Length: 368
Length: 100
Image 1 (cartoon, each protein chain N blue to C red):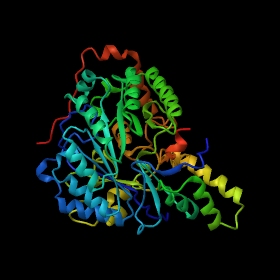
Image 2 (image 1 turned 60 degrees about the horizontal axis):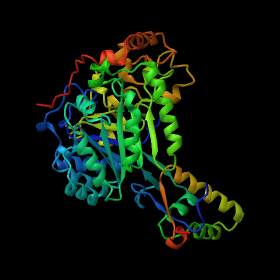
Image 3 (image 1 turned 180 degrees about the horizontal axis):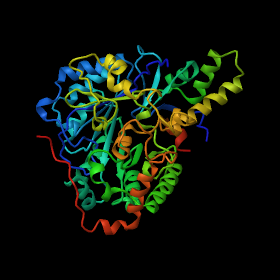
């Protein structure tokens, strides 16, 4: 099979795993990298230039909490100098007005502020700390600048019944964009799945409400939402296809095809300290492993949808199906869908308020 | 709904053209990028808060003088609406006009 290597479009830069929040659905791996292993300012600046040369258009500075890096302003400046669109994904906790102004002056284009809910107590239970008041301050500070603002709400079993309040908060904020993302089950969210997985009623209601909201606010606020794939008929096109559009660099410089790829046994990742980013993207074992269609087995191999969803998510195939090379078990065309059906059935036997009575959350700690 | 002819569109906060030395030119915005070809680049470059919609149309009718002028106008208005729906544009009206 001949295959041309696609051009990467975005780089997800996980600058640190340190974070003032302890969210029970954090996408960071269960085993986090310590501060001492983090890449230097110079290493990141070089990597940002290499990324732009490889064709990347946008960098997403994330973490952990990217503001925990004292050199963030310098990294924003380097990214912008390299010609990248600069997006910051933050809890907003370690931010003040002066630092925001510095980030904007350095070239920040877009700030994405994460919300754990619209109600302080409930949000604090998810984040393991109080944060809502500070986030609302950040929203106000951002209005003084000409940058884009997105409010990111993560939605799940425990907060879906208060979705209207989150939409109202988003509308009142003046943000140009709101994102409602159903939790996806990797990392800490996989460990806390029983408490996070919504009922079918909750999912259906939320999608209806978000569709209406999107239509109502069109042209004023961009409303986007991620549907929960356990309840879908077909899998999501995870990361837009393996090694097709996106790459992620961990705090220590390992280059991954997605957030969760480290769960896949036997997959080796290369580090930006040892090899050029373009080479890692083009020819490293990890990126080649599930790129294209050669790795696919049935039902994907002969399926008409294989160019739409690329077989779904490799990490989910491993986490649920026990093998990273099988069809994503959320797909209703694979016999392994039964695994997902059983998980959903369990989520629908108890009502959300019953499972919430005695929550036993596994909170994400900070790296050593 | 079509924008007013005297409105002056400009790129919304967080939306900008990619650097001129990078090809192809893109309109970059939150979580999205639009590839710009000849006419769409000509339009977006004029969304600077100074050109009115009418001026953008007449300048492009000159550049694309072989095309039907009505067709050029229709295409431009359609493209501006599309950009507005994606929250990529703000339309500033002249004060005197806006108060009517």
